[in-house]
Amino acid sequence: MKDIFEAADVGIDEFSLDGSPSSSPKITNGLISGQGVSEITYIHIHECDNFSMGIFCFPAGRTLPLHDHPGMTVLSKLLYGSVYVKAYDWVQAGTNSPRTNGLAGTVINGIFNAPCESSVLFPRSGGNIHSFTALTPCAILDVLSPPYSDDFERPSTYFFDFPIPSLPGYALLEERELKLPYDVVVNGAPYLGPPLDVGQDVC
Image (cartoon, rainbow, N blue to C red; front, side, top):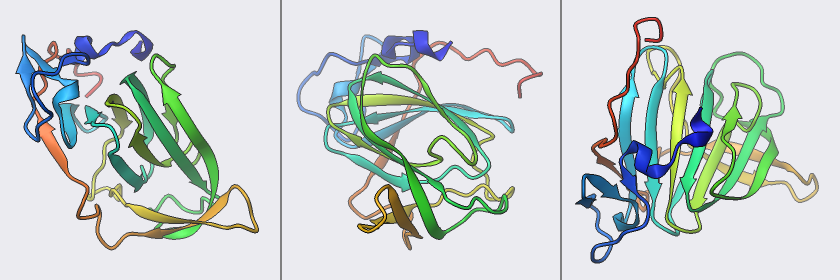
């Protein structure tokens, strides 16, 4: 289903730019200007106990640092643009409790260009720990199941990665003291797409 989504279907105009990019989202003809954001911008669509859905809009050159999704399955769809993705999985997954450091193996280290297929990651495979760097303005639709929750031991943890020259394809991951570096800003924007019809059997 997600592979038929386009930016306009979720309230984003990926093409137009009225003036220079701004930290506040620009709205034209009822759509958010994807080209008009100067910082990473998150558009919240829905959240319940079972899943959350939202869109990250990136200006070119911005990075969302390496972060994990403990105990979660994540479907991601690149709506437009080009993004560099780096993703790891823990070499020894261990228990279901979130980890803050250890040896990880590279799963993804490459560039994705829209249109492309949706990707999926799982609690212990598929690149559960990943980062995004926008090579052009781009937007990524994310569905997380279940959503982040500190109460249920699903916190969001950010990491540094230290590649091991003598062990290609592997790196040591260490938790960042700060969730986001000072130079990483994530703003919010309203969802302007069609209402999401979610039945009681889903949420």
